[in-house]
Image (tube, rainbow, N blue to C red; front, top):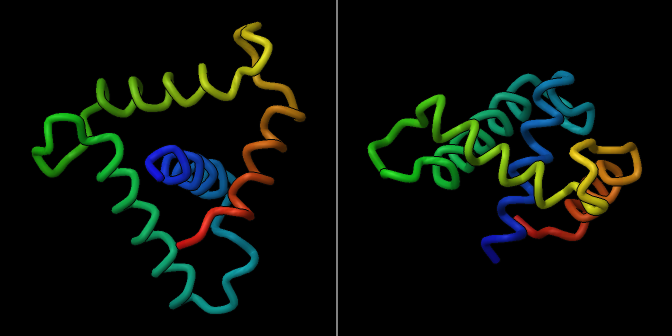
Length: 94
């Protein structure tokens, strides 16, 4: 289950980087999605459980996710590697 949470969180971060999801119909839904994404990121990346994510914790978390997604280990993420991430989030429940 933790792996699915990590995939969902990374997808949420990628969506947030490009703007809030178009599938959220209202401002209220977008705000709720943002709050949920922020809490998931905190839960997953806050290694020392102090209630915040330091730059070091965030970069470590994202670096681990990058390494996991880089299927051919060429230190680059291709469209196909990112597409697999996005496709996998469609199968992740709540």
